Length: 105
Image (cartoon, rainbow, N blue to C red; front, top):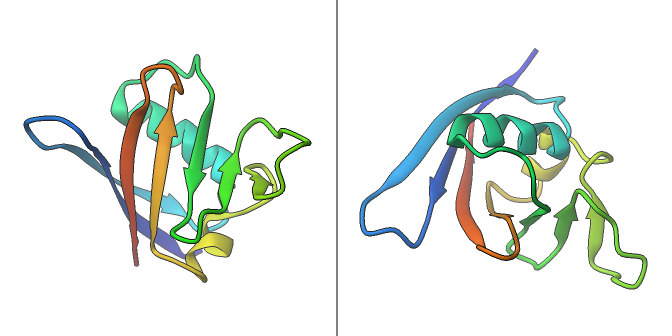
């Protein structure tokens, strides 16, 4: 099974804060969210989304009124990686913890 090395970097801090993780290609984006939660020390108590460079939002909670959203449980990492290797991950829409995600092989 193929794996990806992924760099997750929290942005907006004075000093660099990042983790490098290795995950299986068949994990869903929701699974990736769970891995990031563990790696970054978050407690998985807030909403999240991944955003592609094209503005497509990959979300854990679907809003029926929004057309540019995709369900995070329906896409795998390899589905996303075929289109881009960079994403933004936002956790906690109140505190707005923004991360740069770079998918490497």
